[in-house]
Image 1 (spheres, one colour):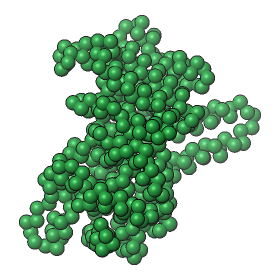
Image 2 (cartoon, rainbow, N blue to C red):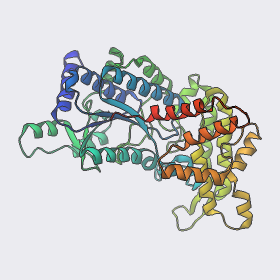
Image 3 (cartoon, helix red, strand yellow):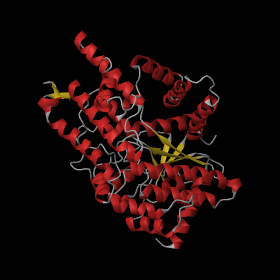
Image 4 (tube, rainbow, N blue to C red):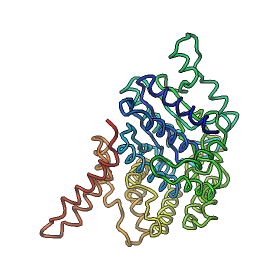
Length: 449
């Protein structure tokens, strides 16, 4: 890739942008290919006169809620810098994350419903954690705007299967018009959404082209591309792409995937980070190995079911409790270092709800009615107050928040603040603290209108 080729690529992006009114949705995963595409798009639109920047560009990043914290930190910084820079440069671009529904999250399925940790033949995680959130977002934009163009960092030289998939969805030009010529040249049909088209700006680039671009040009919103190079040097290998349909390869052997991934025999990403100084990730790696091992210990940990292939079904309730307690131990061990929760309160509530559905008999009911709270208390031994104080009340609150589309985490934090200040006669700072939670939620969810 030389300067002439790069200039031609920028012109191609600008021509497609100006050609119609279809809004764009860029898939960003935090890896080299999607970063390259995002920077190319930003540069191309920034170089257009402000009056020609006529349509919206959304950037979505799928967060499975079980991403490696080191990668999440970089992505969060990038999205924040991108939004600030786009506003300053008057570019109609907004970046945000998309998440799986609480009831589809990894831990609710693993611990709540007892799904065995994923395998190559039972990869239940990909659709729930990756495809569904991205598809739902695209569908919402299609319903508002009629048609959209999804922009991905797919490259033909990544694999033979990727090249075949891209070729299969190429638009056939049966009517020779300028519009059809451009569509057939640059766009492909979406595999499952008839009103969405796919554009891959770097489809013909090789790996060297990608790294040459990233190391030769500064990030237009102020990121340091050298940090991305360092991230790859620590983990080694490829990114986990934004998965928008079943034709997009899942992470498999990629390095920037979920830290709980048991599809592969060895998690090379965490191993790479640990070997390069990120030793605080070791408990997470051990947890991942534990749930992979428990899956294979069928007689000990899984319900016997002769109607299923292999003769065993989900994890037993006793094994799910064990997994949850081990997760709390990992969270407790690493919290002082990284200040992060590994499982959200909403997921704990959903897990408890699933457990209550499956409880049989009075004895089990008494033991597991507050099973999540019991697991927490056993691990933390009253050192930290459980985030689930009253299961029934918190579940009711979570369901009301879901019904009225109000963020549970925001309401929950506001209630905690209110309780903390209730012992004071004069609560002069309570409204400032409550407003802080509201402002944070608004700033994190605001989009280009």
